[in-house]
Structures are given as structure tokens and as C-alpha cells.
Length: 231
Image (cartoon, rainbow, N blue to C red; front, top):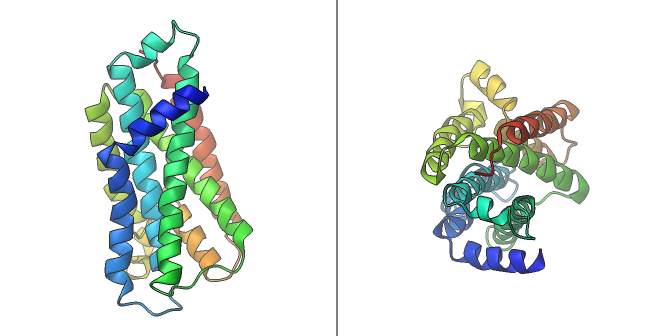
């Protein structure tokens, strides 16, 4: 398992998509960060949600579907390294990638942009874990249903943009029609973004939105497990 993790980590560092997931949210935050005040509670939560969304909807499903397409998972089934080990390693590495992207965003926001950071860490950690679990569950379902890596990539992109719009990542939620913003708040990415903003504003995240993210994570993970194919 350790050797597999080391090999997969090396492959991940060479993957252009990993750099894309790190730099795009950072680029967005830096470009728009020059026009915000130090007490802003909108931009950084948006950038964090964008980063996790990219990893969950782009990197994870594309990687897993590509491995199945190339027969890597099938060949692993006849070795001591079971395919499920590959799944666990990929989930951990993609989680590490999401954490790295978010840590980079928080560091730059706190030091360069002098943006506001949350006073309470634990609520932020809880929101991050639930939001990431929900997005990763969707990524696994995409990987389960996609025929190959290219289709997984396409499905992920097609899902990402409407989800990002509804979540208020492409246009601030307070500038959207009220009913659209309300619907978006109960999407996985929307609940994640709003919960992060609640934490950044110094309040407690909504228990309802936390439950929404947890429900998405559990239900969609169960669907992904049912439909997932190793070959």
C-alpha cells in the first residue's frame, strides 16, 4: 500500500490537471483580491469551494475512469494489491491535493491580501470535510458511470459549471434571483460555499446545510458503490 501510494503520488505531481486545480482558484482569488476590503468574507470561501469542486469533479473521476479504461484496475485484481487499495490511495491523494490547494489559498489570502480568516478552526474543518466528502462522492459516481476517462472529464465539466453558477461561485449569490440563490444553497457546492461563508463571518454553520452535505455524501457514495465497475 505504501509503495502504491508513493508511485501514485509521483504520477499525480506530473499530472497537468493537478497544477490546474492548484493555480486556477489561486489566480481567481489574487485577481479579484485586489478589489476587496480586509474584512471581506466572500472571496476566500468562494475560492476554497472552487478548489474542492475542481478536485472532486475533475481530477478524481477522470483518474479513476482512465485507470479502468486502461485495464489497470483489472490487472490489480490478480495481484496482492487489490483494486480497492487503489481506490483508497486515490481518495487520500485527492484529499491531500484539495488540502494543499486550500492551504495555499488561505496562506496567500492571509499574508498577501490581508483577508479575514475565521477565528474558530473546528467549524471550518467540519465544513471542509463534509463539503469535500459530498464533492468526492459525486466524482466517484461520475467515475462509476463514465465509459472512459474522456467521458468522465466531460461529465465532470458539464456538471461543474451549472453547479458553480447555482452555488454562487460565478456570480455572487446576492446578485442572483432570490429563488435561484435559494435553490443553489441546497446543492452540494452551494451548501459548502454558504457554510464556509458562515464560518468566515464568525458564526456557526447552519445545521441544515451540514445535514445537506452529509446526506449528499452518504446517498451518492452508496450509488457510486452500487454502479462502480473495476473493469
